[in-house]
Image (cartoon, rainbow, N blue to C red; front, side, top):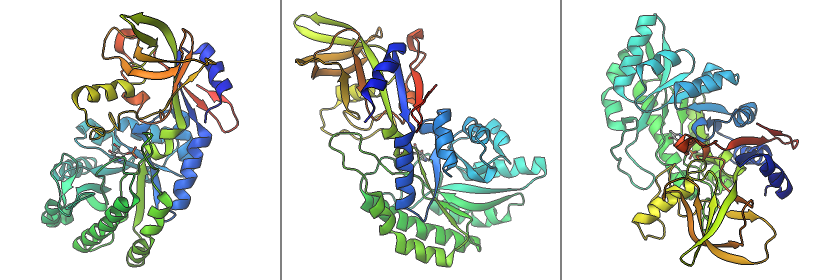
Length: 405
Ligand SMILES: Cc1ncc(COP(=O)(O)O)c(C=O)c1O
């Protein structure tokens, strides 16, 4: 829980702001590490690339899961070595491959991309140990694969094995799989991990040598909505430990990675903003907030989905839509009375809607409204340029209680 006095103090000088709490972040980091001691961890930078967030996760031994050349550079600026940075993304432009080769472990996303890396390495007269993202012949819930834009179908990988082995400059040393975000059922993830260990074994056998790494991707979910239970990461770690042990006995040189963004940072952030106006229109109460769609887009995106379905739990559309109310809202005022209001933002568009008809302590101009779960996929997915308004500040609360910009 964030300190009310601190939030009110920061609200005196900031119209709207994110606050990321290092202590919360560290507690989730430690939780993961102690629950799944057999894994190495990568931080998925796209979730929240704030410099102090990166400093925190990297100084705790996490490597970097980079989704662009820019994120590879962020990892380097924070002192990560090339072997601690994994660059995996679909459709990498030639300039990104050229910039990243030799600076990280490139994870090719297609056989065509492997050929492009081979040609680049040839041109530079160098060699590269690289990974390949695989689209396996299973999903979280089925024993058959699905088509998708990510990675190489498992069947195609095995068909291409002779060509991969014949490559002169590029050596396939690892595989990466990521199928889905925000899973809250540890039994589903356990099953998925078991299948991945078997896939890694099949690839190693076909290559005729052990892999240097298997990246199990993410999937680790966090409770966004009031209805969500927490993922039991300890049960997950223990549930597959026997299979992991057996795998390690056979392949001691293969490092197992898990990458995650939201598990570390999601609950470590809040978004705070001000009430800028209250009014009544034809009997209906409205409270307007600063920088919502253009500062913290999650509410508007949830409302957008709500416009088109009455389903209680519409399907996720990560990272834009997780559930109908993926945060808790609380108000920092001392009102004793409550009232039912429509909370909207102050942009010149009706799409800047936070919550229609929500019951809250009675709001007045200047009150501070706080949203939880704003530490991941929040600032990064919000259109800060919309209407040329001042974007929210992104502040960081250190373990020692210092607030950094
Ligand atoms: C390949 C890959 N890895 C990791 C992540 C991070 O996911 P999460 O923040 O859910 O842990 C994503 C998110 O989109 C992803 O696409």
